[in-house]
Image 1 (tube, one colour):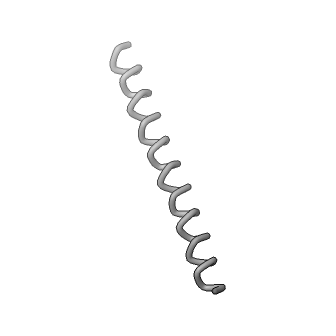
Image 2 (cartoon, rainbow, N blue to C red):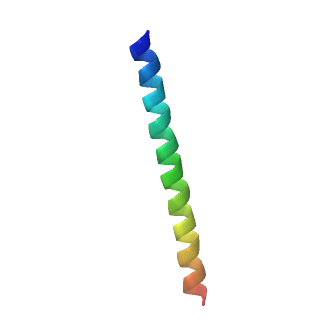
Image 3 (cartoon, helix red, strand yellow):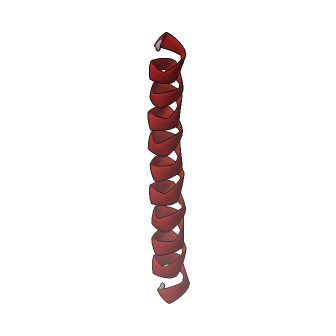
Length: 38
């Protein structure tokens, strides 16, 4: 039981990190587009 909970916690951390990375990439792409317009 303990290991299953631990697995879910680790999985959640990975998903949060991936989501944060994805959002950061989207922000970077938007900044690049803004710079290209200037």
